[in-house]
Image (cartoon, rainbow, N blue to C red):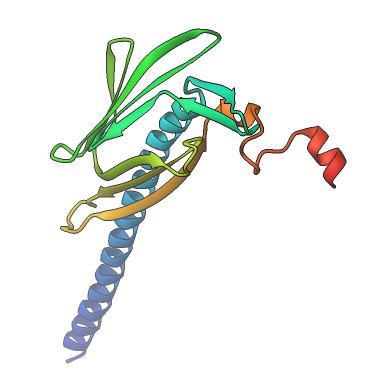
Length: 183
C-alpha cells in the first residue's frame, strides 16, 4: 500500500514538473519569436530610414517666400524607388516587398540584398503634403517552433529628408540659434 502511495505521489509530482517545463518552453519560444520579429523589423526600418534621410532633394524658395523641397521618391504597390547619396554622387535605390515570399529586398548599384524574409506587410508613404517626411509601416511575423500562429511585431517610423531639416522646414528639428532666441 505504501509503495502505491509513493508511486502515485511521484506520478503527480512528475506530471506537475513536466507541465511547468512545457509551459516555460512555450513561453521562451514565444519570447524568442517576438524578439526575432522586432530585430528583423528594426533592420529593415534602419535601412529605409537612412536612405530616406539621405534622399536627393532640391530646396527652392517660391514667390511667397515658402520653402519647397522636391524629393526623388516614387512608390506604388510594393515597390519604392529613391535617389540616395551624398556630396553629388547619387545612387538609385529600390525597395521591393514581395507579399508571396514575405521578403523585403534592397537593390542599389546593381546589387540586391534581402533584408528580411518574414515580412507580412510593408508600406512607405509620404507623411505630409510637402513630402519631407515619410511614414514607414512594417509588420513581421515569426512562427515559434511547435506552434501554428505567428508572433507579430508591428512598428512604424517617420523619417525626415535631411534637405528639409537643413532648410528649417521640419519644426521638430531646431538649430542652436532657434533654441537661443526662442527659449
